Image (cartoon, rainbow, N blue to C red; front, side, top):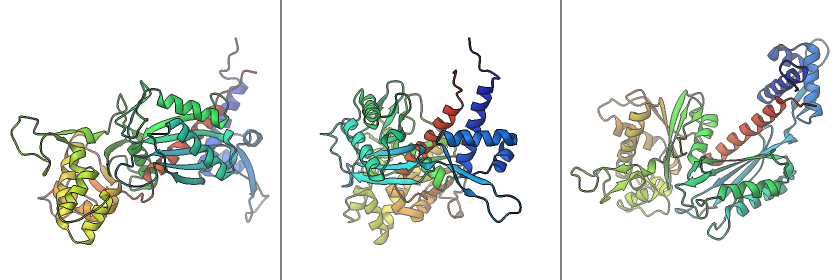
Amino acid sequence: MTRLAGSAKLLRAINSSATLAHLLQSGQLTRAELRELTGLSKPTSSEMLRLLTDAGLAVVAGRTAGAPGPTAEIYVPNADAAYAVAVSVRDTTEEDRPDLAIALCDLSGNVRDRAESSVDFSEVFPAEAVAKAVLEACQRADVDTSRVRHVQIGVPGSHDPRTDTIHHVDVPRWGGPGVLADVRSRLITSLGVPAGVATVALENDVNLAAIAERHRGVAAGADSFALLWLGYGIGLATDLGGVLLRGASGGAGEIGYLPLYPAPGAAGPNPAPGIGGPSDLQLLIGGPAVIRLASESGIAAQTSGEAITAAIALGQDRVLEVLAHRIAFALATVVAVLDPPLVVLAGEVAQAGGTKLRDAVVAAMYPATPQPPPGITGGDVQIAVTAVADDAVLLGGLDAGLHALRESLISSLAQPTLD
């Protein structure tokens, strides 16, 4: 029986894996810099960089200049060694916009292609639509499809890993059994990637927005935070020290389904003004509710974002005030249960409302507190508006996909061969 523990192959695998990790993190390294980071000997450092170069994972980009002594070769990741793709499946019920967004990046994180397309999922199967979008992205970027090693898909629903099924999704055909298996199988076959090499992952869209917020937005450096998505649909993402809370069935954060009291037959005021009978948070602060609230003040809008933009432009403070109280009502539960140090308001409603809506939410949550500094509530919870002005779901998919791609390459190097 072959035992690898302590063997030269195992040590070489560990060292090459660590070398790639440092190279990806630093962006470029010389042999001397690698020795300083790892403590490896001069011959071993040279050997590790040679191994990465021979494997096609690193290239020599030039030589150092301007410093005393001999020049040194500068190694950088081979950007074309592998690629990651992010796909955002959208619920376009509220507005007329493309149903699918896609972006492709290389190993260095450079975005090589980005596009949107309209797909009628009532007529086109998800596997067909996603595979077609990925293949077209590779064609536009002149990328070898076999080098696509990870595809990250974001959906407006919750993924139950136990059954590999999507729940709480309103996009046609995406909620049925076997959908994800079909998507994975079709993608792997279409890309021509060897079995077991490429991976396909699925994530809730609001969770991906939270990933983008941590990497690119106001949550960068935060210990933990909660992100409340305010768009046509609403959702909550909880980041605990960089780890997303997904729940046992993947449904953590589906806050839109939280019922509002009073329950049928119970006495007491209805916390959702203008909504009769049993209701949930989606009916209180979701897109249709925002449009309906704006219409009460004479504002006609097609989307919730347009409604808030118009309300601010027309000086209709009542719209923001009522909406802020509703959002504060939703946040009261989040803060009471999670006690996050930071809450980020995201989605098109938050982007349209900006600091004006944020300040109104703060005032609604802490009416007896003197006006706090910008972004800070009267308590310990900071409330901020998203700083990701672009497509947060797609960008979060790129961030998650690139991380998964790099980790898979690092892990593959850490597995020594038996021959």
